Image (cartoon, rainbow, N blue to C red; front, side):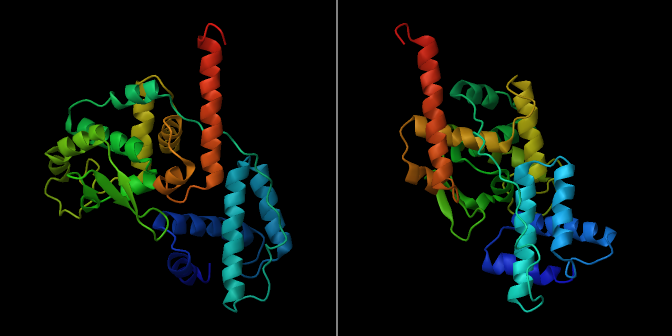
Length: 293
């Protein structure tokens, strides 16, 4: 990938992309690079036929439509960057269309399931960290990357909010409810220092067992572990917890614009989907439970 540094700088500077997003773009283009090497060409020297063959390879490997679309977006963006900066004359991926992806209803938990999930962590050092993490992610609708990137200085527990930059340059201020504030105060009151040990403190809010900033993968494992322990699901994810935050706000009267602001770059289309899904679930409950439904 001849212009990797320049492309990464463009994504960070011009698109305000977060580090995780930049790495995802680069990883997708690197996959194309490996594919092209097998065909005897470079990424910068490939043509539309090579891109089409790459797309077919992705389809044949049973990747999901959303994954294929994301990879094609990354590839197109790289070639657009090269054309706009005079490195190429034409974008070989421009005419290649990725498969259509049907809109999938977002999964979310019931309030009772969330309560059961949040009751799972014990009072050990790690348990208190995990409780604070789960409470904060549900209270604020945070993505795994946002929770991993959070610093202690982002919190104001006296007033009750966290500032979160997310994937855009615009910082959003999200209220933190009392249970999450209580869990965070308990975690910051001792367990975090125990996890940090003798390491230099870089201000990361959530630490792993070696005292370093927790990773997104670490957060995934924690949520999956407690989802299984609670008997909810063996595949519980941060996104399902985030979806639950949105759905429960809608069920309790939040408007679409407020939900969009709380969730950052969430589109109004996605917010409307939460509304529709919440209404459908309410109707299902009514039909099953009301004697005169």
